Length: 262
Length: 277
Image (cartoon, rainbow over all chains, first blue to last red; front, side, top):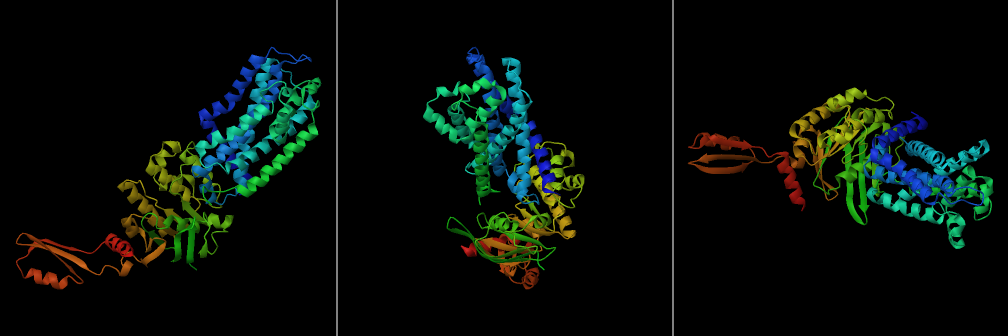
């Protein structure tokens, strides 16, 4: 059996298990959608000079949050759980490779992230009258989405190495998630309300760039005036996310352990 | 060539040495049992041989390869029955067995394995719903589905009821009859006595004794003979009871109360452990 077909077999089993855990399904998908509905409703009647409603801005930015929860948290907590309940130990005693295992996790994470993006874009379009963009923006969406999910998954895997117990994984992983979302302007509109030093701190991390990229995809071009740099900076977005993907990969290769103890 | 060859195996955790120079040889097709109290180093030794842990010192060959660097082909030839896993709770028994079977070049048929461990009726049940003993039987199924040449069993019958344990013993005998080499770790002495061709007693990271169930620890040297004479219980320990019994027949002893007991493996084992303290 090849690494790829074993990875597909893992992906199938990962998806089956995820879908059978109703609580996980509901919380993973409903929570970001609920936050979007709340933020969109509370601030929805504020309009920018360009006539774009705040709820549309949130709809775009929240896709970054959706990916954080489906990729970073699912990957990090899932790996910690697999280490604790014996999944990794079992697999390590069979001819499967670590690459196939990770491939299976990535299949799960990509499936969840796509579903999450569909839910959030759906809420944006149906509830908050957000317009869907043209083809060229969708091309950007695709590479931005792939890069964001990959980066967040790798970082989630890397962070899981420092999680000692699966039951604390959610709490530990949500600290960077919530903190970065606030300082990256996912919940704040416009981003420039934040003190400039805080924006500089946020600029080190991927979340700010993910949210900015999704705003480019779904908002009219004139909205670039609301960004800290006054432009969309697509090249820089790709560069920062790519750099974090490499850092994540290196950390994964350095810290991946099959079992709880070495 | 032997299935397992170990020389001077050592392992420490945080400066505490738990395996202190173990030598072992397990022949192909043999059922070998590692006995010992909790904390003796059984699981650590087994996990080193399975490739789950790295040794600090000594030599180890398992099916001709170093377990620390054994690759995919090597892993396809060994089977491991986990001791405390509770993974895949939301899959069904059949789904999980089929999934793991897919990793091996020539697995046993899924339904056959499930039947072999007596879980045919639970085949479509979620693993979460299995009892403790059923869960362990599933672990056995997952350990043997790849037709391993060498099977590691670490405390496999913990939590089994007596009937399930007997069924499990039959299964192990079947596997052994097919030529599977079996490395069995247990603290149930009657289990080792029932299954093992050879066994070793491990305590505080060292092997105290090695042999067959009848020769272990120099074997049973004395036999206990007891009887009642005028209502009073009398007991004697002798090397050969023949002479004593012949004498008793000629006396007033009540022979309906006569018992002659050979020490069990348990007595030998407990003496070994006590002697070590």
